Length: 329
Image 1 (tube, rainbow, N blue to C red):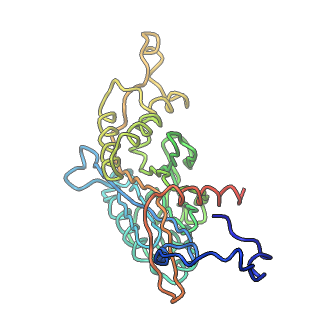
Image 2: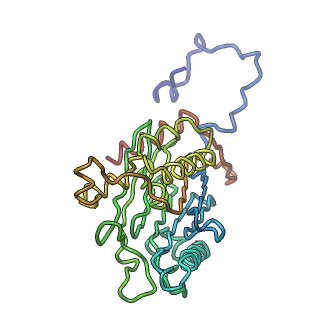
Image 3: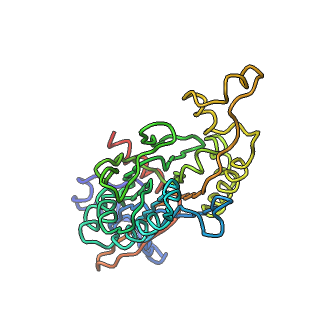
């Protein structure tokens, strides 16, 4: 029923227009009435899966990660640089300590205020005493729906919306197969060298992040297909990791890694080329996958100051998030 005009509400009604008292009981106001204050907050539902390099399975591999869905959501991945093994140093120690420190600094007062992944990386790196290096990515979701990212090296992150990759970060490298890396060495990279970016997300968006073992062995269309067919984030993360592992040991699979290598003039010897051969196959590596889905929470506050949350993917919430982004643009 349309609301009465201001004039009609303020003028005393004529007796001829007075309606008889209704016999129906008064309607109770819905607990989620628009009269109550409400705001939308974005959160992450996070799944993960790690498959070590076949020759490193006994030690658990050299990748490490953490994920935390408290508040809005944060996750991070570190890929220990395997070249340190040639110096009789376990690369996994650095990546694991870096991730432990990153997780422990989440409650730091400065980070509670600004949620800056680059500052989190700075603090975690400074507290890491192991002598090694790693590529790393940290992503923090703000309650407003903005995903803030800090990345050093070639760990990847993609955002999938309505069956399409709508955002992807670029790897940092010195040259092919030699990525930037956070290091204990003075000559290495620091948080200041991180690629820092942000992206505005919507309800239902899917985030796929991983070490290079994932993105070297799986194409975007395969990622999209698995995401669309999976029943949840944990199932999607596991399926992506298993497909990447399958491709990594397939010497006949023309992987993203082999295609990139050929484009950089890394190929078989010339005489093999004359015979029609080319560099092909997957790349065996540790494979870490984090899959996160953006969801919204309607935080409602009544006159008494009590706050309660209404979780879900209702169409009204999704539309509100989309509208907010359009207004920002």
